[in-house]
Amino acid sequence: MASEQQAQAIKNAKVLMVGAGGIGCELLKTLALSGFQDIHIIDMDTIEVSNLNRQFLFRQSHVGQSKAKVAREAVLGFRPHINIAASHANVKDPEFNVEFFKQFNVVLNGLDNLDARRYVNRLSLAAEVPLVESGTTGFLGQVTVHVKSKTECYECQTKPNPKTYPVCTITSTPSKFVHCIVWAKDLLFAKLFGDKNLENDLYVHSNDTSSSSENAEDVFERREGEDPEKYGRRIYDHVFGHNIEAALAMEETWKNRNRPKPIYSRDVLPDKLVQQNENLDKNFTVDNPLSVSAMTSLGLRNPQDVWSLVENTRILLESLKLFLRKREKEIGSLVFEKDDQLAVEFVTAAANIRAASFGISMHSLFEAKGISGNIVHAVATTNAIIAGLIVIEATKILQNDVKNCRVTYCLEHPSKKMLLMPVEPFEPNKSCFVCSEAPLSLEVNTYHTTLRNFVEKIVKAKLGMNLPLIMLGSSLLYEVGDGLEEDTVANYEANLEKVLAELPSPVVSGTKLTIEDFQQELSCDISIKHREEFDEEKEPDGMLLSGWTKSSTSVVSQSVPLEREDNEHVQWSNQ
Ligand SMILES: Nc1ncnc2c1ncn2[C@@H]1O[C@H](COP(=O)(O)OP(=O)(O)OP(=O)(O)O)[C@@H](O)[C@H]1O
Ligand SMILES: [Zn+2]
Image (tube, rainbow, N blue to C red; front, side, top):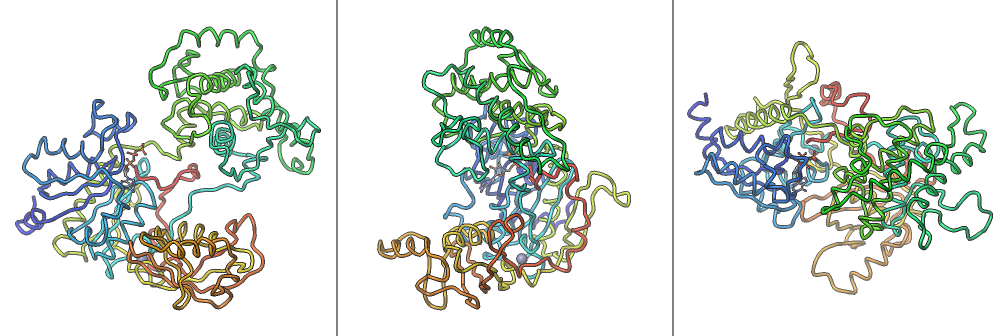
């Protein structure tokens, strides 16, 4: 039962809620039922069928509609007199600036990605509005509280980068099923169906290794008038047969590893069975391209079954055929998505065949989908618990009771007999460049690295700035934004192609750069240190950013088992 003071704080609060997905639906319902009267929801997405099992404010008839707007209407259905505003928009849109954030008493996040979280963290800091941040992964969850100058900000602790794998593990020496999935998704699928102009940084043996001609054709291109079945078998034999044989010729590679075995389609699937697929295919009609399914056309029903090598081969050939016949227009622009049934079928089958070749155990479509979409299947109850905790922390903040706020971890197994583990919020990290404005340093080869590389890999990817301005002393090296003169834009474009040491104001060892993002009201200094060599595997950016180290007060959080060991592919996904 809320005290009078609590009830009043809740009633008067103006709350910004970002994200109306798994956590967001629970949160909005709990806020409304706890007496909150003024809520603004921002969510950029529309409702998908796969959301319906846990995002309980949505129904089948809402599929395709704005999550923010439908969530609003659903809650107004049982709390008609409260004030809910809904924006179907990206929280990074310019309208959600510092002024916008300032109108709220607290910001509550139910997001699922680092980029948006970083943006909300920065805007909340700039507007001096407390933030309650949250996330779940399956049975695990956490709620953290961020109050400027009193607690750490969301970025005080560096977040693990999405798991990446050495290129050679993916292209040549997979040892886990996830390596086969990455190969099938980022390499084979992208090569066959994606944008041909996009650089695929995974090396693909696209020339037929059996051909001696210098201008050997790209085997992945379909020949004119080539029968889809023949084309599929040619690709199959190339990637699972020829390429494996070519790899086997490199004896050194296999000294301490199990040798893979080449697989050819005719050995797995005699032509007769293929005719059978053709017949089934003819009976099959489609309205919605996303409902095209090789499983349906082959009569395989259970996504939890692990298919045999024969079944995987049939699915692979059938899905390729269906892409060519039913979704031809999309070929060349397809990007893998976990909700695209045919794409998941293709990737599952390709990953399984590769796994069979390398002696790795095969997996069901259900499991492969989880791995390929970097997802752990969401648990509705975890989302509900986390939403409840968000409201509890928000209520303390609204009563100015920050000292009693807690960071809470929801664990999968009890620790000291507790499933919910509350700890005191950590202090701001003095070396955090976001909330403590601490300077950073960058080791870089100033004679090799272009300004473009620095902007893309450091300023945007690592520092999360969207509209950066880069200054050396009082001279501007680069700037993005509206209203720039044409000449200025041309100058900046030219600068992007120059290496750092050859910029109009040279960036060399000892240079101090200032980077600003006006939208985020964020500024940081970076000291440059020239370094000749970088380790390609460990430092693939060819640059090393430091200075933004872990806070010494964050020991507890590091000991909390946030990720299961067997899920190394999984990021902190926050469903
Ligand atoms: N930049 C952003 N601006 C606004 N909303 C965002 C932004 N980034 C993510 N979101 C929203 O955050 C919500 C996160 O919810 P959730 O993790 O349940 O994801 P989902 O897409 O609904 O489900 P799943 O990914 O499991 O299919 C989504 O509804 C998504 O649209
Ligand atoms: Zn910080």
